[in-house]
Length: 244
Image (tube, rainbow, N blue to C red; front, side, top):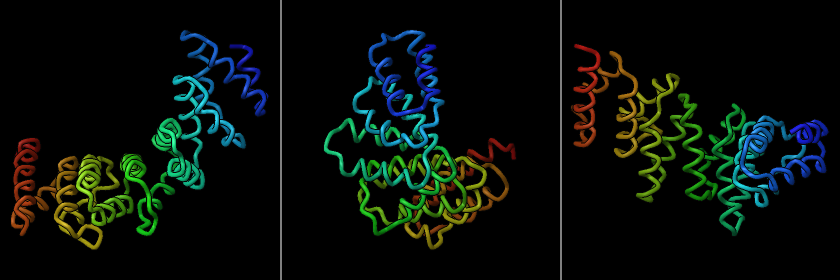
């Protein structure tokens, strides 16, 4: 562990290679766990490319730690590096590693990069990347992110992809997404299709309150029968929860 800490402190490509060599040859246990923990907290800085290339050659525990580290320090530009790597890869390990990194991103700048990716109707992006990007941004959903996700749903024609996006939107719980979900449930320029609006209506059940109940009341007269049913059922459950 002392050797690994010294090598990480040096922070060169050669020293990082030494740490990875140690991890590969260590059996599972406390020492390896501690080194992986140190890798997880390591700022990759200018060595992101080296560590990204190393993912294909390390064991699963080390790969997980590196993915968390690279993802936590990712910016918007790096998002597109990962997406391009996924799209151009021919082997499953490189593809799964790229997705694992995308799942680990957390910075505001990285989320902005993923939102930009989802908002671009001209970019041909694989369904697995879209699904992961949508999952990540939904966890930090704001009104603009909700609008991006619902607009993406409106453009999606594949039933499987649409179903996955629907579940992601329906699971949004961040308070900053509430106003946009209220508007999307009623229908707006980013949520024109009944299938998109249904997902927003389902999400509103995560936001109990008077304005949600009023929206459910309005939607019980909606032209779409499924929206009427979802709104009615959700209102009944919420009314029981609110106690009136």
